[in-house]
Length: 320
Image (cartoon, rainbow, N blue to C red; front, side, top):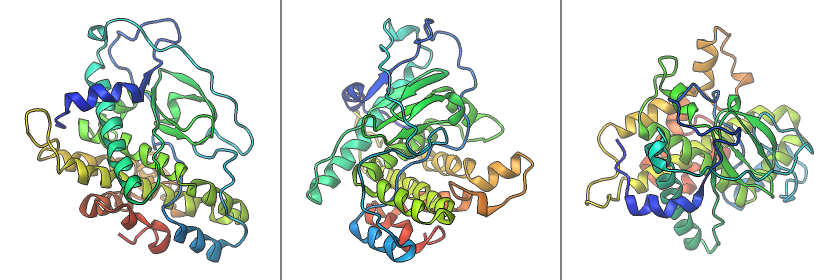
C-alpha cells in the first residue's frame, strides 16, 4: 500500500479536476466497471538525439510543429474539437466512495510532477504542469469526445495537455480478467500518463507523429516505443518515491508495491490482451508492447531513476 504524504496530496488538489456528476447525478453509488484497456497513448522520447535517430531511420522533416494533437484512438489528424469546460463536483467528499482514490490521484499528480520539475531544472528547462481530469462515462476534451471505454489517456492538443481517467478503470484493472489490484498499480497508471505529458512538452510527440506520417508503415512500431518509454518514465517516478517518506517518516513505497506495478504493466501488455480475447497474438498489430516489454521498461526506469535511460528509440522495444 502506498503511504500517501498528506501534505503533498493536499497540494495536489490543484492538479486534479473532478468532473464527475456532469450528467446531473452525484457519484455516490458503488464503483462500476469503467474504462477499457489498454491505457491511452501519446508522446515520444527525450533529447534532440532522438530526433536525429528518427530522421536517419524514417527520413523527412520531423521538427515539432506544435500544432495538431495525437494520441488515443478517438483522435484523427485534424479532427480535434475544443474542450468544453464542465463545472467540477460540489459537495462533501465524505459522500464519495472514491475519496481515498482521489486523494491518491492528487498525491501522485503532485509528487510525480515534483520529480519532473526538478529534472527539468537540472537540464535548464521550465516544466509545464498538467492536470488530471476525473470524469464519469464520457468527457469532452481538446482531442475530441471520449468515453470510459478508451481507458485512461492523455490529450496532447495544445489547448488541453491534460490526463483523463474514469476511476472505474481501476475496478477493471483489479478484476480477475487482469488481476492487477492495489493502489501502486493505480499510481503506475497515473505516472504512465504523466510520462506522456513529458513527451508532449518536450516536443518529441510532434516529432514522432511526423515520423509516422512520413513512413506510415512505422506507425505501430513507433507507438510501441512511445508507450514503453512512458512505462520507463513511470519507473523513474517510482525510483524517486522509493527514496522518500510520508508525514510519519515511513517509506512511501512498501514491500509488495513494486510487484503491484509490475502486475499492472503485465496486465496491459498487447500480447496478454489479445490472448485473453481469444485472438491470435500478432506483434505487428501491437501499439503498446508486450507484457514482458512493458515490465522491462518500467523496471529499467525504476532501477536507474534516470530519464535518459528511457531512450527506447535507440535500443528498441527489447533493449531494457
